[in-house]
Length: 399
Ligand code: CO
Image (cartoon, rainbow, N blue to C red; front, side):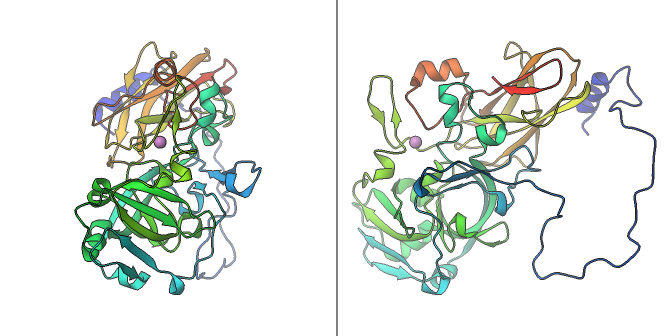
């Protein structure tokens, strides 16, 4: 613990030095196993007492399905693959890796079709990277909507990805000078199609086949997906089947009628791709049981699609005063970043909030500032400061 943080911790707990956390001293030995337990297993499972799970959006039809990560339960910055959020538009296809191929064509000197084994021969690269659906927090546009942090912010997750650089694969095909866009098509029933600016495709875009040390999960695009770091999640096309180099964007359904932002004047902004600076307090947060008086560590996650998080401030009075939270390493670009601040809940009602700043100087806006700039016609790209009200009884609410 840093000495500065330790002093803060002690000052928070002053007068309570021993018994700061009110932990009972009526010690009783935990039971030890008296007989042999289970043998080794071929593929591990979590403890049967652990019940954290994705929250499933009530689906009116298959194309509207999504599942949300339980951010308040997550430890560290990596989301377990089994709890990574999902959004798909035609269900999860079952693609046999031996039958998989990726076609690269259009404005290239050599159109090529790659098998998975072909792609794995390119130099391997790894990157820890978050993904966020641009529809994350969509309910909040109309006022407080989600009942807990899973519902308000759970369409973001962070994984360690393994794959190859798209630039290397495109170099093998020879990109023509006229090419400006890369059109990516998924092999799912929806044939989800998105246009990626070629500069981004050649910069840090990856073709990934690995997630958190093993093959991608089917719901994350098995056997191959695009990973476009920092851009809205839907452009990281899953179950990737085709890449076409083009001199213009394709204006697919997912970049015209969907994934555009309707402004107050009735016009829509298209290709709003980078995800803005954002943060949320995961503890305390609604639906976690009443807060006990005394020491509480305020904990949360911050992220930005534009680079590293450089600062997170926390307010306990609804945004009138702010204190710098401690950032926990590693602090990586386009990744979930942990923050914390020691605090004491004295039983007085209060409003907690966090505000993220990234390395480009992008500062998470207040709801009033966001609505002033964008109106309330939008569905996507809501990144306003989130407020949690703590009542005298310790209950926490989205306000
Ligand atoms: Co957008």
